[in-house]
Amino acid sequence: MPRSSIKDEELYKRLREEGNSEEKAARIANAAAKEGRDKVGSRGGSAEDYEDRTVEELRDRARELGLSGYSKLRKQDLIDLLRNH
Image (tube, rainbow, N blue to C red; front, side, top):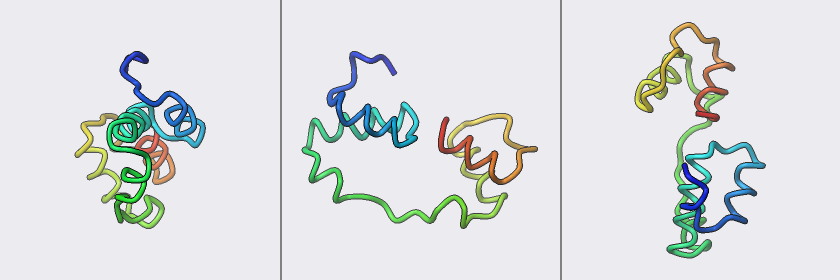
């Protein structure tokens, strides 16, 4: 994502340092700039941790995201791929 489209650079940088992907960090930072950090922070989801999912569930998630090259990956490698796409 082009750097000029990031609306809250400080939040974006913090999210990237925490290990979030560029896409996720930009999405959160831009939503926070538009709606306010408190509002965005309070609407978090309730998805289960990747570690608690089966390999097949992780592969399904990779497929949903349009990722490739995941069919022969081990569980931890799938988790890394999903977190850093």
